Image 1 (tube, protein in one colour):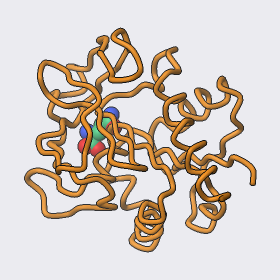
Image 2 (tube, rainbow, N blue to C red; image 1 turned 90 degrees about the horizontal axis):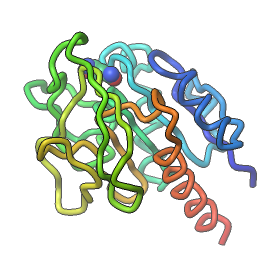
Image 3 (cartoon, protein in one colour; image 1 turned 90 degrees about the vertical axis):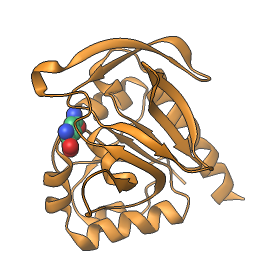
Length: 196
Ligand code: GLN
């Protein structure tokens, strides 16, 4: 089995994730249609605009992503990608893939002009991980199976539940590859499990 990793390629920071994976020696591919999900050992859902991504994807595609999450395929959502993966979205009844038991508040860091870069302490990764926040969602509730991995000013901005990893921020807009490498570790673990 080859390590095939996809980046949801409908809208948003698609190229930046592909570039980060390529710097780690992984030839990932952009995925635009549900049939292209077959055979993937991992998928990144990039930042961008969650409403736009969901409309471009459509119900059938989102349902396939839900099946992949249930089947244990590692998924990594950054910013809008985290919104797509969340079980609940504060103030709106529409939800999408519902693969991680969190509630997110959209645009919690304010407007585009309020974007900022900071460094975070991330469990198991380092205490100086650079993170770019752009109209970022915050995690306002976590279910008992969700593990918080990083906080910004007391609010959780990175979390994991089993095969699903989410960040409020954009690691792909920095030169630091440690969060992508962490996700590749999840993919490697999954591959070993399915090979047994
Ligand atoms: N504000 C966007 C949304 O709600 C997310 C922003 C981002 O991905 N940088 O979808």
